[in-house]
Length: 572
Image (cartoon, rainbow, N blue to C red; front, side, top):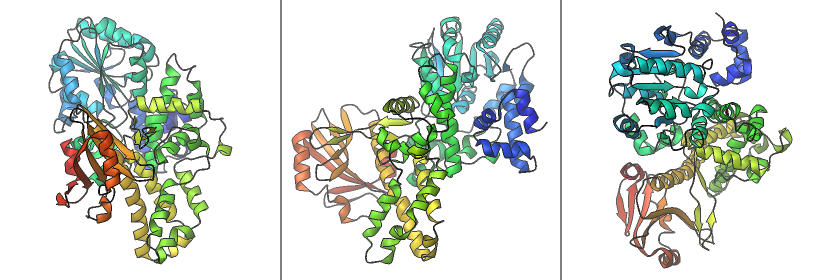
């Protein structure tokens, strides 16, 4: 069967099929029209569509007496065997607690973006519960809640106690009927665990249908400490470049196309695919299928006009990820390029100090805009309002993609500062800029050593800013009591990258955060500034310690402690 024949048999349009596969419509149409385009990729698309329709391997486990794809018995051992050697997510303990505890009237939900280990956790659980009392159900888009309910009734009559339901948000009526799972089946003594890629759908159900009747297990946020343990990767650079999802080669067994796919943030194409399928499409799917769809129709319209990714990427690319209309509507300028131009000026009188001023910046930015799907105001079809931006902010926070960590100003006010929880998504934009830059004819005429130096400078600058965000976020979320964690900004432009204020002791610790692996005196200029330190002590009490977090070895220099940032984050 060809891709087109399979698509038609499923009942999808070309656009819906492209969305499901995480491809652009144009690329999908190429594969549908010419099966010789790429045999490996063509066959992988066939496998994905077969899995989508229930006609693939998973269907061989389905018993004809069930309405949905139900797997029971010995076949479940095979699922567990595939994941038995994997380390468990930190949040796995919540799942296990639900299974072992008394939670009548509650269900458990694995809630998070793609490639964060949800299905892996379901299969890992099979090693800790009675398999003979367990059923695994893989939902398809052709299923509905009535079909699922009939199957759960039948499983209950056969003595099954543990019902694991994967991809449940594919049910069109899920967000409006989910409460029957908690109100009826959980009260009957069944342990029901749900998982799905549409994490926003779960969030919406949690606020209405499942309010106070579920145990939520959030998987989207993967801190460096956990990332390092799960994948045995101890490099903060690797975390910056790919962090936010688990590497395909280690955790991708449940994706029939994993052998032909790459790490989520390997390049601009994979990042664009991830943003579109995991975030933009996530929002679209939920608004389409729940009763709030009409109220939130603004976001659906943005998605359908191909403009939602533009808004998200503009916010992600901006320095502080601010959710204001000006970030989205002003003429797009690469913050990474602008920052790097200023940094390189300090290399004067060297010629490379002026290279980024001599390139064709307009062309470089235009290429970048095409790569990350940025549009100017005049190119958009929808008039954006602040209401659009607020809705997007609300949903990205519900998806655990952004966190609010406002900076504290010297005058006592706060400055909006949102942190992206998936660093690989942000870093890929910097890589896209580098790709665009090396196409510039003037840049190509520069010596190889200078080109390498400039590219490294751009990426180093971005990594430095990202490292500050990573540390702020992880210390904020460490769960330590009686502390406030924030960046502190002085009116004259100076700042402490991180202040940890201990409310109980009325004392504080000051931090500079540097991506460098070298000790340089200039790194501590703010920490050594007597006026800054005096000002801080008046508000936050005695300064107990001063630190520089960097990538080098632990050392003490002039009473300032240099700590390796990777070791520091693992200790959080």
